[in-house]
Image (cartoon, rainbow over all chains, first blue to last red; front, side, top):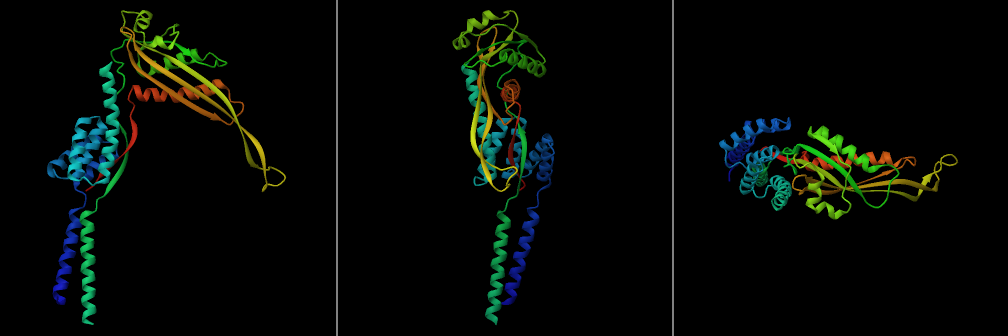
Length: 120
Length: 223
């Protein structure tokens, strides 16, 4: 490998790195959604993340965030669906796993209570 | 010299490739604490009135009318929370078995009105705990220690609550709540301690019945 090739290769990788960083800057909808959620505006957050899912249906982050928002609003079925999608897309993600674990803990409690009601 | 340069370039390339890999796999997230909604355990909407009966006392008898205090406390809190009419009934289960006897509760209340009966059992205990502890000498030598007895007053309230449909006698909600508090003040009276305990229990009861949301942590992911 001569010096020219190596310099060119380095430049190419640097360019890729730069592109990668720009590409991974938080997308507007995702960022907006998170800001809204942090201010307690969960309906706005849902609107943003639904759009983010439409734009990129394979984004585990968008599905996860949407699931959290649905859970917050008490739409447990929708939340479970979104959590499952997020986990299918990114099964190793620790944050999604943690969210889903806590969600299931809540849900199991609710389901147990519902079963009790039915028995009554 | 040429070899050294080549090695340097290779190192730079490896470093850049590593940075590229890290960048592509890195994820960022924020942790939010939010009150998560929960389904209410008891729907009080269909009930016209709330009837609070006497509570069955277990074991020790305190030095004040605790039954009256529990009834009045819950009557007041339920009135504020539900905006429903609350009646106090001077009747109670004679035995714990009565709670499961539907007829007992149906006969107790006005059959024309759809009401919910709140009843239960209570146990109020107080204990004095003493322990030998090491404490700094106050006057003679602040760096030496002396043994002394420390005394704590401990109070426990165990309240088992039953929410019963007055027309069917069915138990709609039943749970045992227990609360203990320890006080350093030797002059702490059991009546004052009771109000601390009943407040903590009321918080738990309302959290379960009215599904008051609890703060929970969740992760929101940026990318």
